Length: 285
Length: 268
Image (cartoon, rainbow over all chains, first blue to last red; front, side):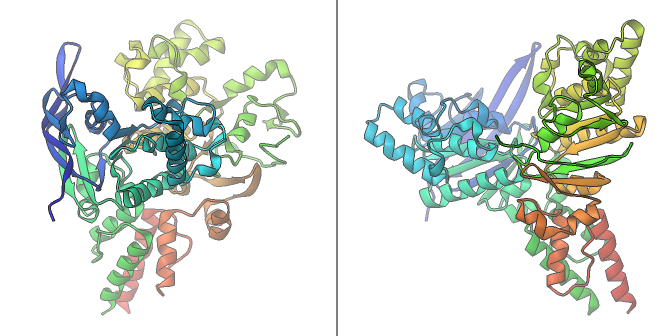
């Protein structure tokens, strides 16, 4: 079956000028994103991943090359609104994204601006809140909620616009471990149940575990692109570009260097324990 | 009326590193704001060097230079025109001026790795990690005997986190200050803390060494926390019949234990 690309990034560079010098934040990147896929883009601060994200819904336009969203070039200024409806963006700080004093009003803000009927808005808001597990908080005040809950409200506000694709730029960076897990679970659910294409930008490698595909960026370029297990196996590459390696990976990697015959392409606690047990077992024979 | 912190008692010794863990809303931040008099307890006392910090309420500001508090996202509170002025703000309020003030700022800057040429820059031209360091320097410049950090690495990338953790341990080595850190990272706490305070719903539920605290995996899980990842891997190994210790909390401890186990097996 031929998969359809919802996003095509063709020879894209993004340059900016600072103190009369030209810098490239993104350098000659090619990348296709399949409709319905879950892609994680890993990179440390300054790797160009946020600039790339902003080019995916026309917040920034490439200096060179083309970004095509569902057949529309982001250079086509007349189609700007259409692109923003197809690709919704969620940012790091949930406090900067919530505007209303009641949760459901906040989620309704986007659909109201689309000029939909009140009945349609009601349906969309309820549906969006249910899909992020926040329906029971619909009458709450956002600032009384936890960071993870606020971020889920921000996601609901985007979902209510019914985008094809969700781009999230470090949505978990300001959250505690519980909040982080809530967001990742929500994204997996939206991807599986609503078939929304998800592009998650993060520097937490654990968050890439359940993705279909992992793209690693460094210094404006894509330096690796593959399945999570393939990428995680390359610990030295990830460390060399300043990425966070989970402690399970760190442990397996350290054991391998000590001569243990461990499988290193695993990440969960259970698989890590199994990998170590197997290596110890083979030693005894 | 809800109590954010309820009937909490503990003593901290000079020079200790204390970790405070607890999920969001457990009262950690409220607790530490009592330590330097930002909040006044409705009941009970906070003693610093055996004296009630509220004994003379007019002098409470003086306590804040002895017990420094670095807030969450402290970089949002930078406001001066230059990095120098921002770091100098606290010591200036303590009465330092002229050469003394200048020395204090440059010493603090070098202690935490802010380059001299940065001092005349605007703090707003710095990267996120650099801004955070300048904000921390502002508190360290007062040379507090106790320094409290509320999630000092939140929102930073791995490099930034490593830098901040290094600054904290360098400051302690240089000054022998007492350090109190609120953190979500059980792994950082396992590697760093002498003792750990566990908070839940405003109450202190555990206060002990990392060994003792992380031996209570069930109790931690019940309040939405967990033991370090490596400890969980070792629990998995024990479940598979591999005889390993439950008291392993860091990667280096784990490697050491497994190497010993492997060598023991090879000898047998």
